[in-house]
Length: 369
Ligand code: GTP
Ligand code: MG
Image (cartoon, rainbow, N blue to C red):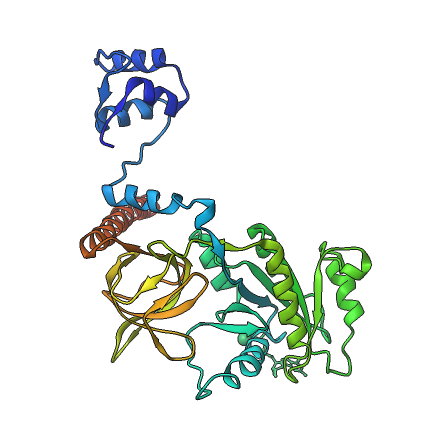
């Protein structure tokens, strides 16, 4: 809303109304308890209490509402989203390929799997979504933008090597995100593989195998030979069942951009992961400064689809520009609100850029003196 009373402001700032009224008086404004204050006055008073006020537009308020109106009965089970992390050369890509090849290519009609940055596989009754942009950079970038896309992290460690710096980095990232870890001990086909050594090393980081009294799931695999993959998938399903992952499928869709590009023929293309709601062709969406109507939607099997539910990765066409990976996206009620939201983001970016620029030039000025 556009105004707030003295009493309401006092509550928001967690100070007494008398203090607010005193501050107002010092600013030359006489006010009563139930008097409405305009935005500028609120900003002035708040500053006196070292609080900066963020004024939200109608669209932004709408977004807040959209995010919080799920009732328990609206929530339906959804599949887990899994990210693969680990040290260089320990076999992340091979593992993802192995899972895809054994589970997707052979099982699907045509057998051609288009690379869209994420894919879904079926493990018995369950589906699992893998984000195919491994590496800490992607994981960290998404976390930095507040995008909690991963439900489970697979930490790949080569059995013929050991816990390496990037393994430790990955452990720290995942722990900070509060995401359960499954350790995939890879390359068990190698003659020098030593699974016990890996388990010992991991235990030093509080990742203790179940058979040693801990609660970390270890799966032994050979990504190269395709060994242990089914077992790993079963473990993922087990861990995800404990999380009771749910989402409301009957809402305007929102989620995260996994990757995007500018395609010569098709224009801006974004791979998105739906977290909430169902995305339809024809929906008006905004993502960062990009906006548009979803012109077409392509799934991980390269098929055109009309709608997509939570935890599904899809490629979408029709955006005004390619949004950044890690950016959130959301469906708005119509074209206009979608465009307004993107425009507001653009203005915010411009303001920030201007502030940063002036800071930099000031610094440079002092340096040159
Ligand atoms: P980066 O993306 O560079 O960090 O590496 P990565 O973790 O994706 O490793 P990648 O899958 O590229 O595998 C590195 C090397 O290890 C390749 O030569 C793979 O063929 C080999 N490799 C991966 N998994 C296995 C395995 O289970 N057994 C054996 N013997 N070799 C493997
Ligand atoms: Mg790789």
